[in-house]
Amino acid sequence: MDLQENLQQVEANICKACENAGRKRSDVTLIAVSKTKPVPMLMEAYDAGARDFGENKVQEILNKKPELPEDIRWHMIGHLQRNKVKYIAGKVELIHSVDSIRLAKQISDEAQKQSIEIPVLLEVNVAREESKFGFFTEETEDACREISKMPGIRVKGLMTSAPFVENAEDNRKYFKKLYELAVDIQSKNIDNISMRELSMGMTGDYVVAVEEGATIVRVGTGIFGSR
Ligand SMILES: *Cc1c(COP(=O)(O)O)cnc(C)c1O
Image 1 (cartoon, helix red, strand yellow):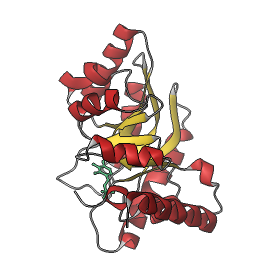
Image 2 (cartoon, rainbow, N blue to C red):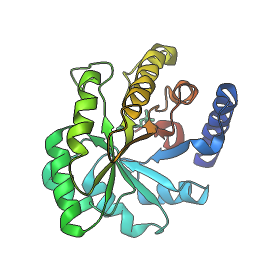
Image 3 (spheres, helix red, strand yellow):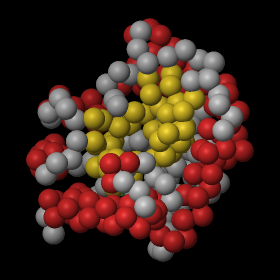
Image 4 (cartoon, helix red, strand yellow):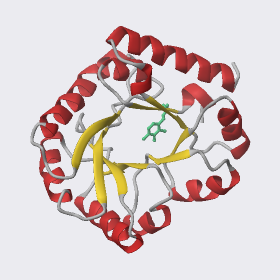
């Protein structure tokens, strides 16, 4: 299959999942995860309609962004080192991977320096995997409270990367958990903290994630092929 067909297939699957869940297609943003892929492939995806692109390395965003149309929304989805915050602040639509208070503080400092607001998601390690970054579920509310006091950084919701599994159904419980956590934190009405966005679901499990309330899915292999 070519890239355009892949994209159409993913689109159809998202539509179906929305239908199953009684949700509107417009409530879910598809991010084309283009890490390691060359600029011409991204352009092909752009021509096929993709406007949101996800990368996991700061340098790759900085390299690709000037080569591609300006109406692309770039998403930082990978672990972000504090010393690299200054390079992407103001250049990306959303940082999905705020995984520590120290990183949040750095983003806040940079936002103040540039007199901008920086929208972020908090990454949650719902499945408590040792190899993964993110707050544990029970730490997330306190993290929100602390970050809510920092100027310039705006929490828009939560993000998770579920475990790699053969059967997507095995991850349903983690997506449910992230959704419940967001509802719980939303109910606390913490200043400056929104729980509107839930970034969850990758190539192997985005259909299940949409059924469980994802507002953003991050699909790489399913669009661009294997890496
Ligand atoms: C690579 C990556 C994805 C996409 O993974 P696929 O399985 O190729 O769809 C999604 N989210 C994050 C954080 C990633 O690093």
